[in-house]
Amino acid sequence: MAAEDAVPVEVVAAPARPDAPTDSLAWLAVPAMVLLAMAPAFLVESFRLFQLTSVVIYAVAILGLNIVTGYNGQISLGHGAFYAVGAYTTAILMASFGLPYWATLPVSAAVCGALGWGIGFPALRLGGLYLALTTFALAVAVPQVLKHDALETWTGGVQGVFIAKPDAPFGLPLSADQWMYLFTVAIAAAIFVLARNLLRSRIGRAMMAIRDQPTAAEAMGMDLAALKTRTFALSATITGVAGALSAVAVEFVSPDSFSVNLSITLFVGMIVGGVASIFGAVFGGLFVVFVPNLAEDIAGAAPGVLYGAILILFVFVLPTGFAGLLRRVAASARRTTATNDATPGR
Image (cartoon, rainbow, N blue to C red; front, side):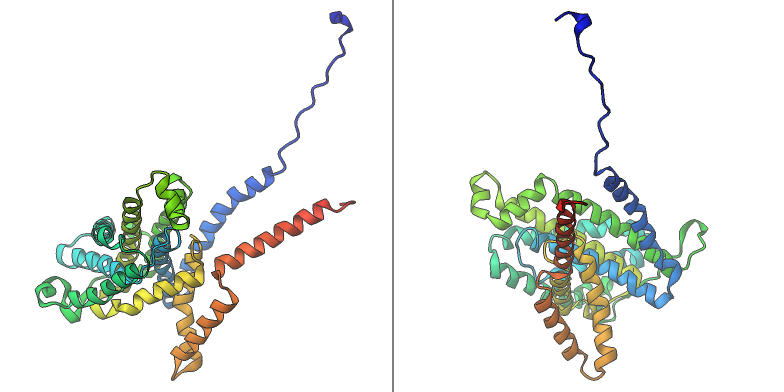
């Protein structure tokens, strides 16, 4: 065919991707969530702000437990011990060595990570209920060790250690409670983002492969013992940072504050928030902070009975936790949207 006889081709611009508005909304949601998280610092009174700070701290601790239990399949009933070690490390560094609160956080993280590695190296070779029993024994032993006479110079024995809550830096017009809340939210946000990225990486997929199919994972060349130990150490590190933040927020640490009940509380928060869910830890933190207070206000003389009843109800109604409920609601909304789009005339 001659060149002059060729049929001209009209170039039509490709339509915009239909998910472009969704991407834009996703990016807009990030600053919206940041503003929403910061708002309580300027809207609620000091006591409620302290409770919300505790929620954020518990959420970080529950996230640490969820990494080793929810994503790696190792049952731990002793994470309250790492919480205690992180809290005492920060309190001792502030009270005895005069370190600023922010400088104690990486030290507490390193100490708890090393402790988690040392305990996880032999304990994770047991696995299953034996690991649960080993970590439970750790939770029982740590408060007694903190009371020992040999460590009383540092730990204060049964009297504990008092520290001062820091004031806002750079002359910011914020109270100590407001600054502590904002500082805790910033640290927690960084930890949650890093955990999310890690669990979506190759290492995170390997952790879940060991949880779901350990035999197949080992056959593919994965070093199960090494990865389990590293996961346990990472989990202890995150929970230790939560304990360090707790020491600064409460301004006091004592052995009786870190009894076995703390480890059970973290485990309950993980179950209620949702096992193997990153942001379910936030719901778990809300539950363990506010529900016991609600039970005490309602039941009066027997708050434990009402708290236990509420917990049993949650397990029956929401077996996959708050995160599972949100996933089911989101899946239902997607199915409804897909049905409406497929309906003729729409």
